[in-house]
Every structure is written in structure tokens, then in C-alpha cells.
Image 1 (cartoon, rainbow, N blue to C red):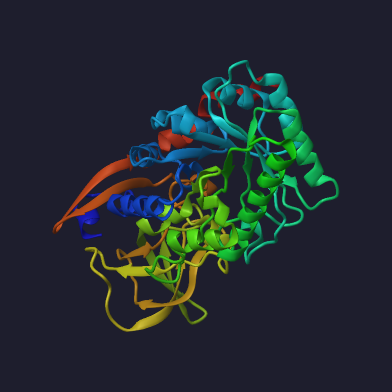
Image 2: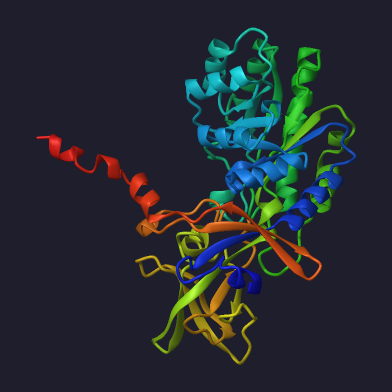
Length: 427
């Protein structure tokens, strides 16, 4: 914080910014690879939606990660980051024919979300296609504590529902008709989903792969995409669960995953970056209402969207710092940490015990290295904040730019400024 203020990375003109600890990211990737080291063949991909920033993706690909993408934009970012197409996996429940054709032409792996999508791939797949093609199934093992993050419920929009009448048989027929269909994919969910639930969904997918291969009399299914979704602890600095905890749960539920019968693909996102980043924001005003103190800051729903809209599911820890970036001290009083958006619910934390904050002080929102500042909400046409990477080198902090703050000219251009007069022609 002191370095950011001294170097002008956080100013009255740019009062909010995101920061990423690159050494922390490297350690998270190292621990992921170490946890899965017993698996003979595994491709770890990063879920691009968790940090759609090209420099971050370039760093991760340099550390041996592939990319999991779910849109044409994410595919473009992965390619611009230098990720080899053979290490990219395309997942989306609404792929167009154009998206499918592009992926197949590039040799990008793709997981069909449904049986109709397989029909499209039948028509579009060229001879000699290098793309690995899989089918996403929904093991319907249930949901976690956050419904919106649970993707293996009975009525989830993702995948082929295995427990619906005829669902499992339809999957068997799909593989029997297509010798090039060689992968099964499942993703149970992420935040709020316990490890045993996630592991059971993976185990059900493993059992289905064994069934398919046994019925066909050949090992047609050669790889399993087991998704990502490791939940993150937002209560303190502890990393829990760990990737070792996750592989232990997998080993208990489906020990066959570790003997080399199937190559594995993972799609972790939040768990790799969340604890390796934070948002810093200036306190613009401090006020009182109903007997409670309110710090009005520049970090609200535009960059902490999930926390503001679902505070019970996405609570964040808040740090208090003074104008020079030193930790605020003094008696703690309950304070609301409010954002700049023009609606009453734009509050990041309510009645949080913190040292008294005033104009020119700063707040830090911890554990926000994934999603938060990388994919901001354009509410009130607030500019996207700058993002900086940093490393602690002995007693020295070194920073590098990841994304520049959005300018007002860029906001205007994005909002159709060059077409300003065109509606007048519609008479």
C-alpha cells in the first residue's frame, strides 16, 4: 500500500486499483501441480473467466497451465496470451456453429454441452481434426450452499442429465455412434460446494466412463475433464481446502483416477488467484446515518459485484489504512463500507468493526484476486480500474502494469459515441 501510494498507482484521480501477487500465483500453481503429481497424464487449465487479463494468462501459460474458455472473447484472450490451441478447452452451454467450427479448425478441445451440440459437431468436424471432443454430463449429485454456484443439481442448465429417464442410455448411444468422442466432462460446482460432493460427481463420471468402455469393448473414453471449482476460504489468510485435500477426496471416491487409465483435465480458476490479489480504494467521505458510521469508498458493486448483491454468500475481509498506506490503528467502531454506485444497496460490508476511517484513508478488500477487478460491472459508467502485479523482493516492492485504468474517452467510445447522431436519421 505504501509503495502504491508513493508511486502514484493509487491517487485521487485513480482512487481504486487491483493488485496481484505474482509470487503467490506461482506458489498456487506449484501446489496444484504437486497435488496431482501421482497422475501420469494431466492438463491443468485455468478458467479464463476468473481473470480475463492477458498478462495474467501469459504468466499462467508460462507456468505450464492451459486455458479453459467459455466464449469467443475468452478464446481470443487465451490465444493472445500465447496459449497453444492444443492446451485450450472450450466449454459453453450456448456455442454457435461459428464458434464450434473455429475451435475445430484451430485444434482446440471442446466439450459439447448437450446431444444436439454433438449433431452440430458431426456436421462441422473436418477430416483429420486434431480437436479432442468430449461430452459434458450432469451427475445430478446435488448442490452446495450457494445455488448459483452449484452445477450438478437436478435441474442444472449444464450437461446431459444422467439421472433423468433415458439420460444415461442416450450418452451410451452418443459414444457408440462417434468413435472420435473420447472425453467425458463434469463440473459439480465451486464456492459453497463441499469436497465430498465434488468428489462424488467426479466419481460418477469415472464410473460412466468405465461403463461406456466396457459396453463398447474398447477404451474409447481416454480422458476425463473433472472441472475445477475448489472453494476458497474468505474468513482468514489460511488456504483451505488445499489441492492436497481435494486429491485425497478424489482418491477416496474414485481411486481409479490415479492409476493412469485416463488422462485428466482440470479447470481451476478462483482457487488459484483469489488469495493472491486485493482491491485498494480511497475513502472519499465519512458520514453518519442512523447512529452508524459510513465510509464511502471507490470500491463497490462495480468491482465487488457478487459481494454487494449476495453479501451472505460472498463476504469479504476489509483492511483499514491511512493516507500514507499504513495500517489504521485505534479503537474499532462498527462502520459500513459503501461503494460509489448510485443505489442504496451498494455496500461491501455492514457494521464492520474497524478503526475510524476518514477522507483520504484507504480500504483494502482481501482475497479478490479472482473475478472481482478483472471483470468489473460497468454500472454508472464507472471506469474499469487499473490492475498491477507486484513482487516483494527482499524489502523492496516492484510492480508491473497488467491493465491501465479506463479513460473517459474509452467509456464514451464503448458507449457508441461515434454513432451519436445516427438515431436522428430514423424518421
